[in-house]
Length: 411
Ligand SMILES: NC(=O)c1ccc[n+]([C@@H]2O[C@H](COP(=O)([O-])OP(=O)(O)OC[C@H]3O[C@@H](n4cnc5c(N)ncnc54)[C@H](O)[C@@H]3O)[C@@H](O)[C@H]2O)c1
Image (cartoon, rainbow, N blue to C red; front, side, top):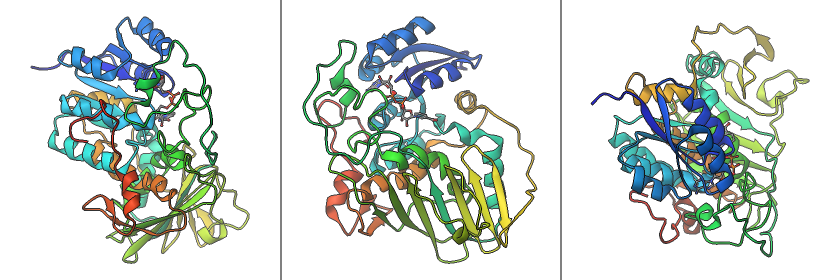
């Protein structure tokens, strides 16, 4: 039967989730049927606004509302993305899920497999800048080879802007009445609650919950070359950093990956380097003028004819022999990332950052968090089997054991 209104539930409706659910709700064919949040204050804010059902536990929401809804938005911390999103796919729901699509590579691969088995479902990762004109122009220009054949790819971010590189915080604080800490932990191992350290928004640098700056920003920044050059997974990767702890990502790192060459590259492999925590490549080595000021967040593709700079929301630029040249931008219409997903749910369009694409990108980017546990070691990646082949301990971070009671079919 044809859909009249899309009944959507928002899982994690505070923080970025509030932006996601309000942007989705602004589509005229959407009804927000429910919201889920482990923080009762955030939940009340959303259910009062949308006059909808409210739940603390997304498993309960699916059990009670599963046959009344069409779609879910997942905007929780990273470690809960895959379980909440996979349960949606298992129940034949369209899914919009924040970036990075998943916490670990295994989850990404499994989501892509299930999404491929259900092509009638619309899926989208929450990298809203991917829908902008400038991002899509950049992709087309790069794919058309304005900088020649690809030789190297570099990307960087000035994040983290939250705590990283610290030992696990000691002690515990009373759990606030409005927070269900056990549900917040979800699939992750139990640890005591500490004020201001995890919820809200402070969990990113902690290995158990987030993937640090590379997890936060690389899906936003590296998606353009990934899309343009049809990249999948690296053959090997290595993280250089000196202050990762057992609990947390390092304050800064350089992650080097080697991708197989393809029709877009000049050689049989493509070196791909990520920098964060304020580290950046040198403009001169990138084929840019010596005095060039690199933006805080961006990526660069060095080709055999020039250098293409794709800013994070700051446009595209091309340099040939160290001099900037004008871009012949293709005509592209603006679109709304959330609405495009909704239009996909009605079968009118195919989303760009669907789980097929988003999972490939995420699988590689979150390898940066796996590598940070083994600084300075080159880890060999077996793409077919989703595992590290030369360091068996690393595979405990490629696929995690879910806490009892939070297991989800297909993960
Ligand atoms: N696309 C973007 O530009 C952008 C910007 C910021 C954050 N994000 C992403 O959005 C997600 C959330 O980030 P944030 O900064 O808003 O974090 P946050 O901690 O501020 O908010 C997360 C929300 O989810 C709720 N939550 C936590 N665990 C939950 C669970 N198990 N079930 C239901 N609700 C739960 C929290 O109470 C909170 O309301 C992350 O994946 C992050 O990477 C994306």
